[in-house]
Length: 513
Image (cartoon, rainbow, N blue to C red; front, side, top):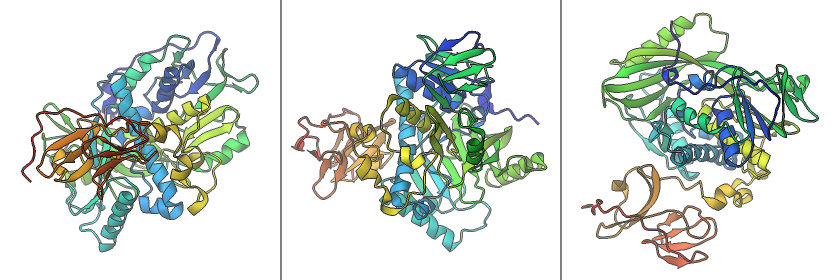
């Protein structure tokens, strides 16, 4: 059976092994999504890096992804709230949303053609049940209500596309071609004192002065980021590393890639409530659509007949997608943690690790890269305590996420909690304002009583936070420092002094209702 993912048909640049001693600011061990992104972000910040990969970059776990870009976590929202608190749940989901925005911003800044697209995500009732129980429907409704309360623009719907089951629709999720994206990032890393080394496995880690040995060569550095799927020991010490490993569980997920007739299903991401859950991604291609369907997760190494698992998975897919023509089969590995949150932080002095991304590898891997950059540069990060590798359980009022982190750069420069509320201007009623995702960008859209649309940049002109619509006063209000703007963008009250920037879109005509 050929288990090569269809992503792997996309070629990547090749790099040689290390052949001489070098010195850089940061050594990054692991050439997957997390490591490549960290190397890119650090170099953009003026830091010299050496990216080490024991094989070929983006060809192991990263190459076997299904590339769902989502902040909807494996741990259900009501479970996170119950286990931790609303603040912790909001923080975790918000971190994922920030990471997706970062991926999008990189594609724009580097002009990367990687099929990036904003799509909705659907969490729906189990595919294993003939119907949906009243309790299951109620829990989905609870998740929708919680998500809306925490600012994530979700809505409960009675019938999710393709399976006709009740579920929750989450706007502003995304998908892309992972290797097209990473190919572009890899090209930016070498040069100006930075390196990418393939076929270069990290061997001995030296504490003082800090260095990583690869064969007979040594890389001196100030900081090490271990971005391997399952973290290696490094300078942690065997006892401590072994204890850390007990908090991780590795699962194998089974994936099918199949052709579908064109335009039969909406481009979207789907997950059901089965344990373990099934997932689906729909892509548009010339000559037809492509479905990525997976599930049947089991602990790695504990499945006796993997071919039988693929057979079961195909039977399940054909029940719901009878026209599917299977073209690819592959396996991916997922690292789960003991509490549902990833581990991102220092395990030794100047040694940072990231693991346990559960089913959100590309989202949380990007987040980890951002956090590693911040740690090396000495920046505060709003998720450092929540995701720290030595964390203790955070409950109730012990951690006030919004209050304590309002002054972090993520919020100071842009209020990430202001998600797009709609994907279409048609959903903005008369006398109403909403943040809308338009052509991949957020806009503040207001429709007056006559139906005329005013489109504005949602970025406050004071310090660049994202404004929110005040339904009572019909104003755009900034949650960071209190600036207020009229519905059509003029300053209503400071500290902002300049109006919201108008966005010209002359082809948009007033609606009739």
